[in-house]
Image (cartoon, rainbow, N blue to C red; front, side):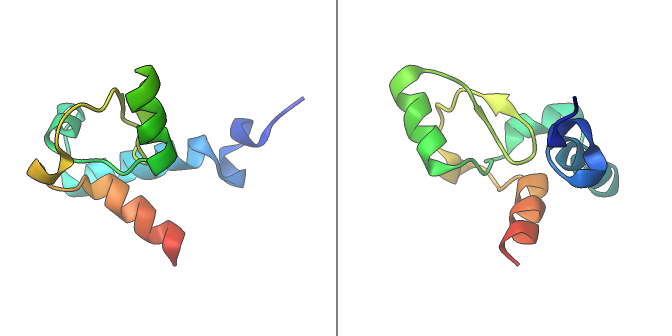
Amino acid sequence: MSTPLDSPEQGGVGTLDREREELHREEGIEPGDHERFSHYVKKDKILESAMTGKPVRALCGKKWTPGRDPEKFPVCPACKEIYESLVK
């Protein structure tokens, strides 16, 4: 039995991973560059993380436990592009 996540052509995580890889190639973003950006995450997930300590996953795929002021860093270009494609 397959799920939507098993078929990247139907959208889901596979599609986001592929789009992120393409954006990284286009923007020249190195794998470690994620640490230098603020990332887009659902607000309820940020609150949950603050209460439980569970890590969150950004639109670009980065997984971490938030703990720094996002205002001090530029927005992740991958997160921004994915977000803008979702709100159109």
